[in-house]
Length: 279
Image (cartoon, rainbow, N blue to C red; front, side, top):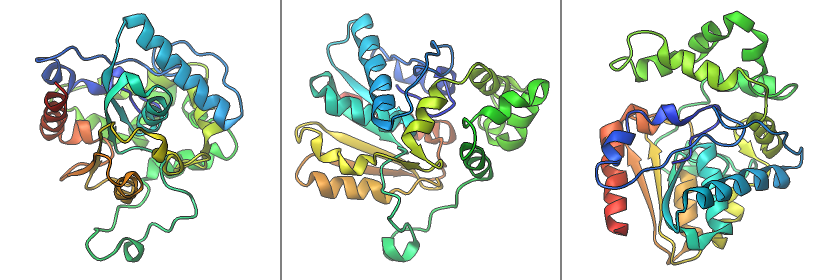
């Protein structure tokens, strides 16, 4: 399981126990995020992406996995797809959860262009707009570090949803503190992300231009939150590009971008069903 930008393994707290009842489940902090090491990243988009992918392959080798159901959320979905393209024999099923970086920036994601049967997506949330502004001049999470001791409060102000998503598990600011400490160290993974991205919502190397490189025999499932700001039309476009290849797009009602936390039971059931199909 590969987390998204600014996250860490702790965000899977609603999923790990349920999913690990019938099989081993592995989750790790991406290179440059959470408790993983924080090396320097190149400023070139392709080289930065390759550094992430190389670290995932090194991790796979270190734990001795021959192949796996690979799941990635947001940025993790983008990197999981790139990994599956480079190491197809290691991926038995690719699960992409509200993946970032698929569409081209020139695409118009409006209700009219999507057609009458596709609901209009919510706009970019306030916290994302704030980070997008910072990205133009600094590393994405520089504002959190610059805030010093007020950093956790800043996280809580811009991401109050994190506390709400886990409030039945933690009555205090545990999750806010977790997100803060995942991102309070020297910038590393976010430097790589900045190299790969245009503003915040777009990839310099859009994944829709590369999904045809996935082997036709590799099953791909794309899970989207019905209330997410991420445009699910990229899922349908992926299915069109892959044509006869097994590609399924699922929508989870009542879920925003963090599908796994907003609707954990439905998310866990969907992932478990996929894993059983591989078994």
